[in-house]
Length: 461
Ligand SMILES: Cc1ncc(COP(=O)(O)O)c(C=O)c1O
Ligand SMILES: N[C@@H](CCOP(=O)(O)O)C(=O)O
Image (cartoon, rainbow, N blue to C red; front, top):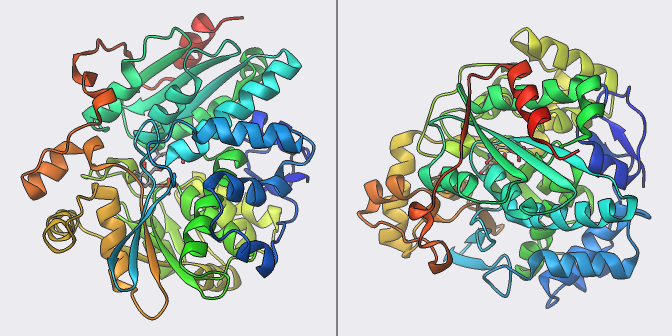
């Protein structure tokens, strides 16, 4: 399996190099040269299998020679052993045709753990084999950072630096990043918003000297391995609802477009998905783009679903690549226009996007009302991101079962949940002392050179 850049000008890489490289050298994102497919019989055989067995079948065709079959099975087993639910991603029925896919039973209580725990294992195995070390730099609006720090804390071959927008993540998210004591993990609070943090990370990848000097690697959904691991739960949930013999639709609370893009890949692999619905909060650039055909950057507004407070949605580039018939030059030109504020999508490409994705936007008031209503009507306490998804998901209910992705545990966002329900959702007992642990934070104004210096000064060479 070979990987190519969405901008068409970067070296073609193996899975291992793609995983360790992060951003392509032309600024694009890596995607597989061809998307492998599974037959209806292979999908039907997943019924009743463990999450780990399905994960192996779904991901094996993408990893090439990077790991032997036995090694890959072992890495998958280790990745999910610490999850707090035997099913890993259980489905809960809300209404006759509406289901919640609970993706928050991992160590940091958000869907990011599904990919990050596996990536942690894969990095460790690949680096142990080569004897190399890497420096991971990531941007987060709260959940990627905590999942990355959890997955890589204490590892010898890796230093991790996570940039988060100061004052714009929940207290639980911040403490998950700032309280680990291992000296190889560093949380940097940056003035500004998530888009600024993500731009800094991409700037570091585009600074080739710095990139070589620190052996830069990325674990944002820039990294194909992240997207790949998220494809798996589309299969486990759809199969338990009758796929491949019937279609299943998904509504996905969306920000950086990684999770919903994983659903698109599942569909290309042969999973019979009806609708893939993008659910946004008031930072609704993706919804507006699908409606108008123009991607016009706006400023980021803080909301009660902070992890989705994003306007420059990284993986939308991957969606564009497929919408433009894998034309890297067309994508590169649109990304150049984005630097000037936005771009207009061609008629053919917007038609392709609209046939792949539906969308909707939820106001702050409606997000809160959805949390209140789901507790009253369904006995379910939703995190605000999941509430955005559930609100849009119920508008797309029909004859095809709808699965709304529950992307985080309500206890990560206690203030919003308490305001909507009067209930303060407790953290699991293993995190009960989170508020008592000392924090370790580096503050930064968001100056690229200054952050690069912090990283160079702190890495283990
Ligand atoms: C809880 C939660 N829900 C939804 C999202 C949006 O996911 P994506 O960025 O893959 O679109 C995020 C951030 O990634 C998140 O942390
Ligand atoms: N919502 C994310 C933003 C980063 O997204 P990623 O999937 O590209 O890592 C977060 O919680 O940090």
